Length: 399
Image (cartoon, rainbow, N blue to C red; front, side, top):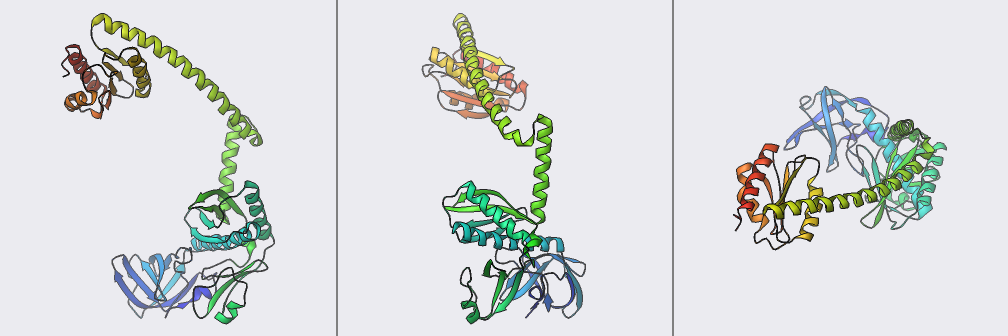
């Protein structure tokens, strides 16, 4: 069986090993070594990557107690000696996130009385789900502060094996799921946890931990966080964004939220005024279009160069409220879209008429009896289709 050297030292990065077996599979080639520092995926922590010889190790997993390395190509023949090295930056990041999770979970349990249900370590951030259905921002602020106080205390983190009998006498967070020897990860004075992952040697190596958000997932509290260098990168990014916003808006960063709230309220007021003015304009345009249609005896029709199809829908609503019989054909030259509507007394189906006419002009769309709309690839296609539809509506060829 492979000697798991990552349990001897989580900080070793390179070593020499003997290839024990080359295992082809549907996923690629797996290599079994006589000893390894590559940690296999487990307990929420991803498997390590790195190199065996000059061959890239894409992932590491465990099967029937053996550690298997997924490689991009065969690094040699069974029995040959190879130099191996970890992708240390990635491994150390995983150590920081995993140790950060232990410290965060212990603090949440102590301050909120909420046990951790699951842990996920992703490429960009990590999450823990805990047994809590309601929470306050004040509680989460307390948790974050206490975690960082414990980081600054630089508490030792020890990993060691004990017998199942010895484990039974320890104040473990939860009972171990393995039989025989149990690996314990101890944060001095904070918690004892049965865990097979790799960890930093002291809380000070976490640097800081930042809670990014809290949300309800499946009835529980999910905390998204970053620690170590990830948290530092997050802090740098947020600082740059705040500095840029502060400079652009000529507002101290402490007053940005207040400024945005004022702008939001002002925007709501202006939007209300704009909607009222637009309604007045629609009423005026509807009156003019209706007057022209009655004068010519044709449909209500017009192509607009400055309106969206959503705005045309509002105009069509205003028109059908005035006259339920006349067809309404409107077009948006900015979006290459046509809209056909009536108030229910025109004697034809808008959707059926579109289905008949659109294919000849590459139009795509449809609708129901009273409303249909379609989009076109070019203004010329829209204009041609508009002309044909207007002609048919003029000649009442719409049965």
